[in-house]
Length: 174
Image (tube, rainbow, N blue to C red; front, side):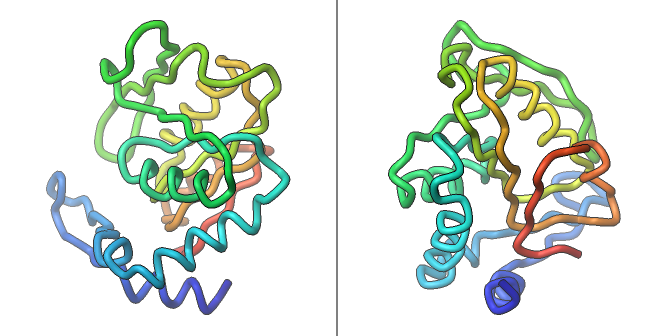
């Protein structure tokens, strides 16, 4: 995965003080605009989880992009994990903290069949709050989290510490 990691790194842009002062936003727009690199990323994720998962869950908003493309590539369904108020009832909701505030995520209460194996996909693993909240939602809705996949892990924020016992993978770790 080193070659892929180098490609992904070369297509990321850092935007200082966005969305708040002190936050270094990781912009994946150049990666998404580069069709061969985006395809290589999707193919890599799909290959690694082939036969191990039944459905892919993507976290709003950038997790939707990689998650939906991966689900399509794998021939699987895709479930949206959304910010509060974006899904029709009935939903499960969980409040959580992130590196620069608090938020609420929701998932449809009928999103997963009992015991369905779920790959959770997001763009960045930072403090682990979003991923942990998503795991809680998946499990409340009847799914089983098989793994958490992200493009970039900010290891200095120790997000994996909030995900004990979970399989976590990142294409790039800084």
